[in-house]
Image 1 (spheres, rainbow, N blue to C red):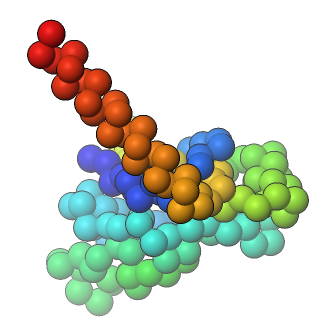
Image 2 (image 1 turned 90 degrees about the vertical axis):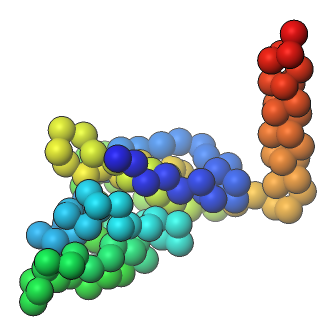
Image 3 (image 1 turned 90 degrees about the horizontal axis):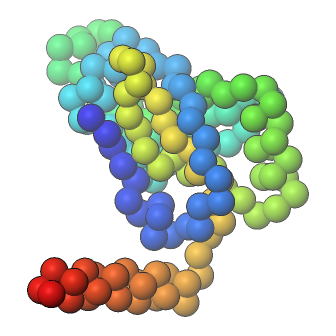
Length: 145
């Protein structure tokens, strides 16, 4: 089961990607397995040498009763120290943003793919739409040959 942030590829140029683990509470993992998570409006920041995912929505687990979690709390991400240092330098020196691209499972553990991104301007978005349309037309032509 994967949750993909399709809007990120449209709004940003993705320079590099990183895989990170997520520190979750008990009922959060059950909600994610049920597909009740949203990473569309979220982003990551580096605070005190640690990476946090801000504004990720994970819905309440129905059977969670009093042990349920807060829906949009900031969640700590697990990366190697040298990766965090490299990301911190890029974020401080240049105009980059850490955006979650995909939420998935590896051997039963939730992982998130972070993208080191630069924002696109409107004219860049129009170009990407043109490229996508040209690829679609080329695929149609090749299909009928």
